[in-house]
Image (cartoon, rainbow, N blue to C red; front, side, top):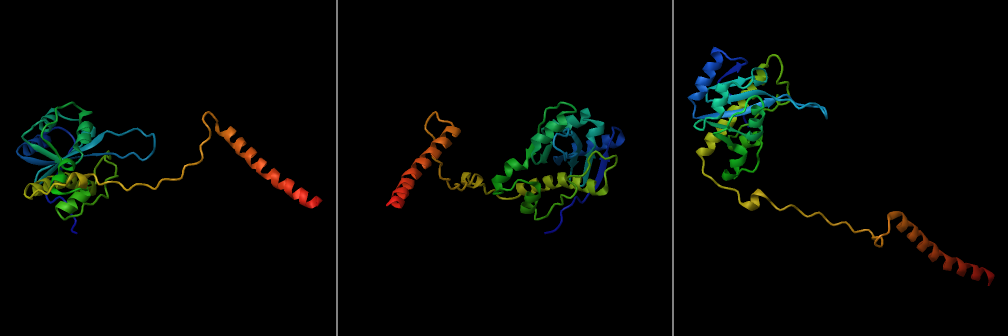
Length: 239
């Protein structure tokens, strides 16, 4: 299976200015854009949860990586997120949107979640990697997923990974729109789980009797059972 990667030009935006305005202008002309975010991973239990570091938005030929962890959510970015005429296609978009709203509140409109619609085309697997294989016939590298997205500079590998993750969501959606639907049945969506064999139940103690009393009762019962046998042995020895 061939490796899928973003074929266009990648732009990293870390501040407002002319490059930022050009990015918003380009994305505003798109009818459908790919959408994703990246967050610096947490590896230790109890460690502080990190906020979204990167917002990726991709058209067909250009991908923009906004470093929202340092520049925040500009009002023009929020307006783009609230524009119902521009579809933002991603996977598990609810969590991504909530992460972005930490920086500035906006009314999210025009979002398409592939994980919620893929079943209409008979697709059960919901990860981007598996959906890309099923829909586009390409494999997506996840080697940079756990890298440091708050680094001072993003590596070329990080940039390609981030751009591809947004772009491939757009490409999958366009491919689905051109394909005939074959929805999964309710039984296929929620297949019955195999029943686990039941373990034999232990003998229950009488009502109101705690575990220690139940153990003493069983020991007394075994002791009484031994006494007749001992008495019979003594009689045989005396005979």
